Image (tube, rainbow, N blue to C red; front, side):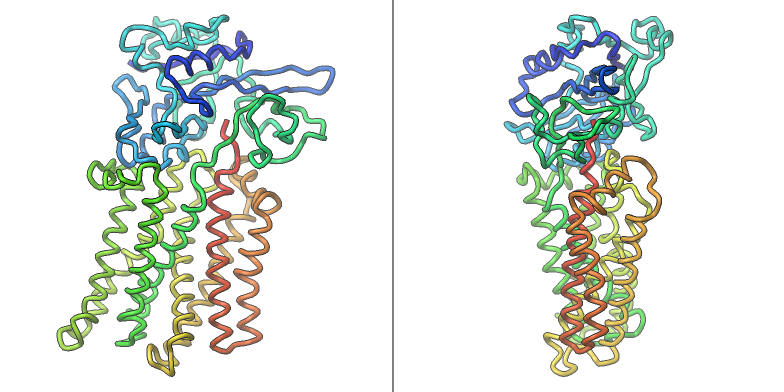
Length: 512
């Protein structure tokens, strides 16, 4: 059995009966919804028509929210309905980031994820969902898609239907008969200034673009706010993780190249810096959860398809490598066998690189955020880690190298060259991700918020000017130790700004 649902747009009158019935039946709190109706007006006066779209969970055959959930709080039943367990949820909001249909919310009372679940409690009693029962136009039809004699299967075979975002491969089981491109594709309708929404719950900072004063072929007339599940904590965690992974990765690469042999910057400072920033990363990850006390469930009941789970175990392995790297220094030179750091470096390089890069695969699991689904993300994160690690070492060498106490001049010169090369590579990756031809209209719209929209000041002023151009200029003009340290500081600030812009711009485009 595969339960599915049809919304007949040729019958829907936009009355919101389904929305209110859903809210009543499932005791949905104020401020959130499982079913909502969007209005889009298409045409130019006097030939204008209003289109309605009922938006809810699409009950995908391949649900991204299930795959990304680290603790199986989102799961798929045998009848292919996607259900949720609020008692298991840790509140990481990964399912919200992954849903391409903006159908999941955090319940303000339970602080757990929730969504339309097809009124599963009614289905089990052979009752129809509440929205189906109350629809005055019989515009909502449910049934077994695998039964060729069911009403839904016969209507789909006879009339055909559309689904939202079929190119993402989620295979949604919410079908629209007579659906309009203006409603099915969020980017098709202009999103005007919020002050023209008399009743809708939009706010100015949640709109994308400004079109109230323009004549548009399609114009959004009524909608609910677009939510951004991941915020500043995620951007900061990506930055601290880059510093932690980069400190050990740079030390390991240097060791394999015969640099920093026996010097404190590699044997002590690298693992200490990595350990401090790894601890900060862990705190940020836990504090960002709606249920921080449930954090250990990621390890105790892991869902292995989720890169949140894989990443957690990668970070555990990285922590173990940090301790292993620090052990010879704590044991003393007499107990440390010759060449031990080269052996540890062979393990530290892949583990550190994995700690830096796994977030790219996690972001790629957020199917609805198409900006993040770029093959450049993983190598760019490794470059960012190398930039952060070498930058921190350049700063540490300036502050602590009195004179040559933590590294030799030759090693310091090698580190500075590494920093410059990584800075140039970072700038190249940023330029490629922003200025290369964009894969989809969704990506183009997200990039527009970086280049000329909401995040343009941070991008041009901090990422590119303060984070790339100024460091190079400072080094060219004042190549002293203090100049290098200042350049490294600016680069690290620019690196955080890029994480911030990347995280928020990826979530800036409405999904419904």
